[in-house]
Length: 306
Image (cartoon, rainbow, N blue to C red):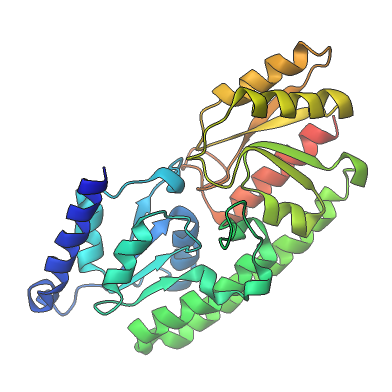
């Protein structure tokens, strides 16, 4: 796999050494924005309102922690007019690819819009938790950064993009207030969120939850029998009513926790899945960022107040 990654980086370097070839497109062609995640792409779509083309590398249900770029991704990146990625190592080794592109095309880590003090430390020394979007108030802060890059790409429509960005930020501020009001239905002592991996720390910090993940912040980590038994002990001891699946992670480990809890004389329900690292598809109510947040909050409140 390492050799494949090196070949992809080498291929990208070759591509970007031929800017004339890739810029010889019709003048009326729309600019192309490439986003790594569906969550970032949702912000972009709201701002541009159809004035540009958008390519999302990681669609619904895709786990960005273990994602490997495909040939079609390389082609899209080579033709992009601007690239947005999350940063904070969410995209793994793809960050090395983006570093090679910065001299050729604007390549923006949206997490850089936040202050370092806003980040939550991870279990890895010197690295931070990348799941910033689960705190709606923080996610609102990346919108101006995205909007600024879009306006620079298409200054003719900058006023429209800026208005759309302001409207979206107003929506997010209202959503943040709604989340705070909704989670208040759960007594403070019952706000324990036990999930497949440690993706919800920003949510917990903002909205007052103790968050425990079976895996660390990356789904690349291995779940041990000890991890399962430790979580099962916590659930049985505190009589926690529900544990949570995630849309981008197999259910096997969570089912093992449920069985271990049953062996301890307590029944814990497996709640409907949460969307952690990507939006849902069009068949769900979580196919937009706001829809995803509302879905997650409703599932959490319903499952912990039953």
